[in-house]
Image 1 (cartoon, one colour):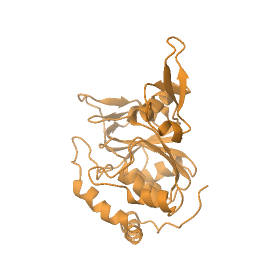
Image 2 (cartoon, rainbow, N blue to C red; image 1 turned 45 degrees about the vertical axis):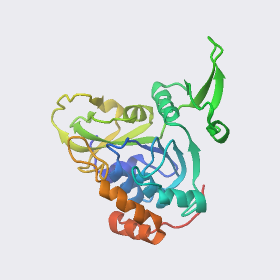
Image 3 (tube, rainbow, N blue to C red; image 1 turned 90 degrees about the vertical axis):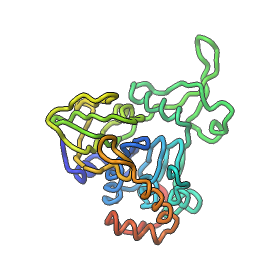
Image 4 (tube, rainbow, N blue to C red; image 1 turned 120 degrees about the vertical axis):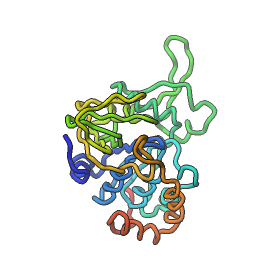
Length: 274
């Protein structure tokens, strides 16, 4: 089903949902994140392996109650200041966090995509995440007796990704750095894919990932939908935008002006979690 972006978000992303906007440096679904802000979604649990600027914006707008993640920052620049404000000062609302390693998050998505309740990995040993994160347990291998880490499957209510192309039947094609997008879509109950273009035929590309229409709930055509990240074969990463975001995100008033000017959204209203 090919729909406008506003309709796709309205139909698929609901208050209180667990939402994954996945993309690793490349093909980050920024335009979809902005539409979530514009529609004023609230009490979301945001999930992502590497939350960066778009999650800083969604958190700063007051859309999120919880974040499940591994690493978070403004890549190549520094901290996420709206994220820090939520954690340190509860502004615009308190943010609960659940922190994992990259490997732990990836394995959780794989477990969700595979239909099993948890994943087992060699990881977390020697870290304090085991003591800080209640969703990390240890199990004993029934064959060797080895103690291993176990983490629960991730099954978002909706996964949103960006891709280069889809055909008119809703089959999706992406290539380049593809991160965990495939598994995140397969693990989700619903999925929205924004794409640079819709074509009559998906021509093969080296290293491609294909998502058949049967696993994609909706597709929206959003040229430039990953900016300021990049879409391989379409446009480059806008490094200046990441640097500019650092100054905007440090100041609440500057951020409120950014929301109004760039998103068309009102300033966030401080409130309580839950």
